[in-house]
Length: 264
Image: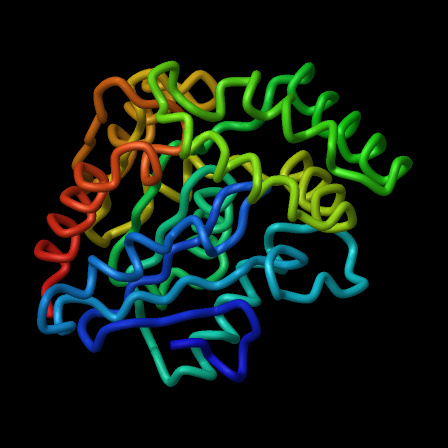
């Protein structure tokens, strides 16, 4: 079901509220499989909510200066509009960064946390400089074409990824708005470290990572799992950075285990 009050947000199911935040530079469409399957056969395991983040998909970018804190506050407003006080919040890559920003700014609204193929540490200086390079290039050209090949070559997907999935990811990247891409890169470059935030969380957590994730590798996932007081780590064999797309059954199993620990 599309949410009329939030363009680009969809929901399905009636159980524990579960928000899934998409990776950069994709959209909530990447969660289509989870939106369909995670609620369970009767729809009562989870109430899955998949919003587009600022500027991506059908969501408006606005005129605010780049900040992931603003995206976290967008989520708080979405939950308010849905009448949800507390939810399990999770995200992959950039969605994980937003999840940690949400945990920093709205910790009382969390029932559980899912962090997939992301990291709590800051970028290295070369990585930060590359984000700003991409932001400048996309803004100057008014096109995201340079991302279509560059993101795939950077290791967004594992080496054994099905050709049809590669094509689908290329399509999602190509549909990203240049303004959103530039804004998101600047926001990620300016994000805060989240190590202390994770250490202070007192809710069940799941950390998921692809074995061959070169962008946010297993060592970063292990660090987060070690910091979180109540976390389970899942390393998915033979996949890369987009683990939920590359191995949806294994990814979904980890999410179901988290939901079981959170309870109804």
